[in-house]
Image (cartoon, rainbow, N blue to C red):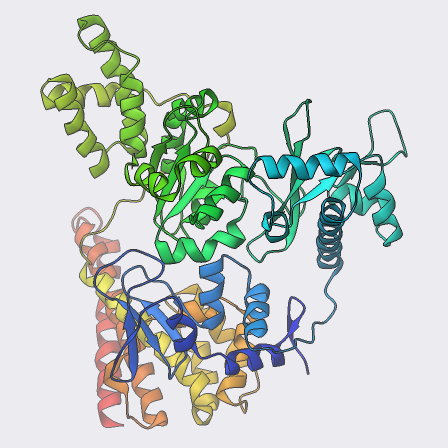
Length: 619
């Protein structure tokens, strides 16, 4: 029987896994040093100086003891490239020249594939219009690119194009078999209001910049008008494939350089990105007609923890810089996984990055980037320039103004550091800053950022309680037992029954256990693992934690008994601890009946624990 995940069969999942050496794969991104049978290095998912990232060639799993990330080869690609499970399989299969036999998916996936195809054919059409067609309009497009120092190989390397409009694209795509609805949903065509049935090209007389997803698939377009007209730049609207809040121009090209350099550069335009790449700054991306969003920062944080926003030196760039206060809210609202530290750099004069690279060169641009300052410091200093601190009235108003920037990070170490900075700026006591911050109202976020969701930060725990230590060990034991089921076919029959009696500490462990017992207990370990992954792609992350050292070398049958005993013992100790905590909170005189019941229950649990230990010692 053939099982599928998306459109990829489990046999192909197994073939790709077997062909991929996890040490070789990760070694391309991380410097690994062997210690015994394992390899260690600095984690690619968070900044660290002391290696805490382990790769185990025996299990083909990785795990970081610093940030907790872990999994198999598929999970590594998913995390590093921010892709879904099927795309990670395709990426690894391509590396090893493995041909995948993809089965037909459901209608939505087929629809998505048709939209990808429509965007790809559109990009090819636009590119040919620029590179091969000789008309006055296409000549003007090539002349503009040459004038902006984007001639020569640049149009080919970046697959630039020209949109003639006048329905030329629509007729071309319809000849290729695409329907009216597909062209509208891909947003390469539209029906004008009041012109029912008349389908027109969305882009007319524009130089076209194809926008790609992380895998390099064309998903949308940006067009710069030739000559006069508004808007100067026109982007695709949101579609099934493309969302402005989530996507960044050139992220597919820049992701490797961002990871290797530890830095992402964000500029405002397509031509700026191309100029920066041409000058050697290949870690540059651009937003797509929208302000920086939490989704953008979350995407960039997949590859780096340092993001530099490069603002133009012209009036528009300075207006964007003035909105840096809004970005403080965006950064504070970014949740989940790693977070990126945001810095700001501004160009001198009235130049944009493309002009600056052309006139000043790489070294000068590097100096600008080296002078980047943290976003919050930049926003504070920017606001201070609007006030005359020599005048007492303005000093008071200036303090009220700038402390509002600290509200999104209030209570953090960052807020404390900048409170000290304001003490020096204003020459006041620390209490004055603390009082102003306590009374400060949040910033009014601009309409472009009104959809930012605010979440409370969960307080960090400095120490584990004894109960947490018990639970942590129980979780590790359960993980070891699940590994035993996968790796040792001879104990599976015994564990199938035991799995039904275990109260799993994690819902993920329970889900894995249910999948395993439903599979063929005679499968080889690699087949078992592939079938598990096909049904639950995140299983590798769950199982990638610490392998317990005390159980190695034991016969599988004895090891199964040891693990089941240890898990049950841990669960009983955890329950006894919890019930004792409840007992201490009860008033024995006022709640005597409840106190007595709880005391008897604890005694029964302690007796069960004693019986469990006695039985295990006699076996």
